[in-house]
Amino acid sequence: MKFFVDTAEIKDIKELAATGLLDGVTTNPSLIAKSGRDFLEVTKEICSIVDGPVSAEVIALDHEGMMREAEILRKIADNVCIKVPLTIDGLKTCKALTSDGTKVNVTLCFSANQALLAAKAGASFISPFIGRHDDNGFDGMDLIRDIRLIYDNYAYETEILAASIRHGVHVLECARIGADVMTAPPAVIKGLVKHVLTDKGIEGFMADWAKTGQSL
Ligand code: E4P
Image 1 (cartoon, rainbow, N blue to C red):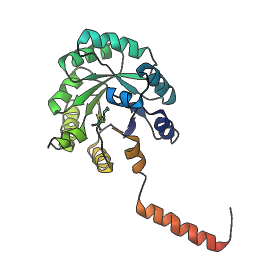
Image 2: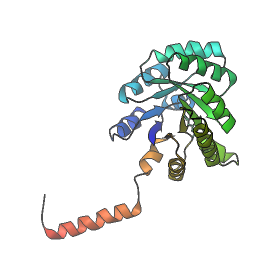
Image 3: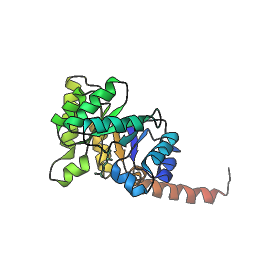
Image 4: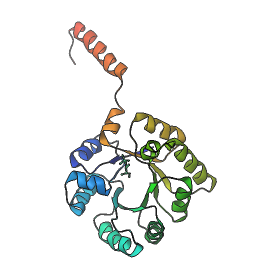
């Protein structure tokens, strides 16, 4: 499973990129606002840190506006992936951009039918929002499961980019189901390495090693 980080914070992106575990980055207007940085400037900087796709979201809600903004965004770097909302205008924009060879991430997906439409529009990625789905009394994992089944039924190449991930159990379930990618906040990704028995094991080994009086 590919790992994307869901943030526009340069420090976190650099730290995760240095581990070699990072395959891409996703941003959205809220994350850009949180960073306090200029949208185009910070996106350019992120694209220079990671080789993989960097999702940058259009702000316009109409097709013409989305196409105009996509034109600006795709000039930033070769690894920019245009993020569009799951609306008729977003799907129309997705079709036009992907036919032209541009990578597109269709975001704010909350139903398997929406995901089916995105695949038909040629989306490179579909972003089902697990956490927000759960928050509203639905089961986000059922959504991922349904999309996996439908995409496999028709051999759609659109990658399932599990988004709005809140904790390690979400990551584990997505991996079990076979989501192609997951995007999570830096803290969730860093938290995956933690296990109390790993810490305890290291502590024990270090204590016993000290008793040997040896050094390496
Ligand atoms: C995905 O691309 C979105 O940016 C993100 O995962 C949304 O997550 P949230 O529901 O935690 O805001």
